[in-house]
Length: 187
Image (cartoon, rainbow, N blue to C red; front, side, top):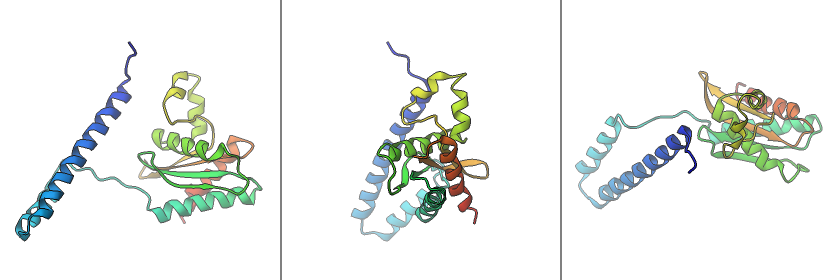
């Protein structure tokens, strides 16, 4: 029987908890809508704001993600490279994906996977690729791609997004373009 990793167990538990929370919220919302009494709706809102079980996260707005993606694509075009760029949020969900004119058909998916990898480990993928020598099974984690070309976007040292680039002749160039997208967010 195949052993399940701790990371997989945590991820599975998190997904189950999120599904339960969504179902509960849906039921509460439905019952609040069915009630015409304003005090019941106000009480529900007050209860939600007081709930210490809620988590808040920081993430890029769609405008910021688009700005970073476009700056990345512009840096590649300036260097004469045809690439794709992806910006993912903290959970690895794709927020923006731009396939540059003339970019190869494999580049969009590779860009998404590099962005996912960078945000997951809060490190440039060139650094993460070096870790494969000590832990070759890292490459088996679904959705990851341990090739240079991904850069994390941080807020107070914590990852809030990832930018991935694919299509240039080298991962170093891909990562240089991704870093241009990160830097554009500071302007």
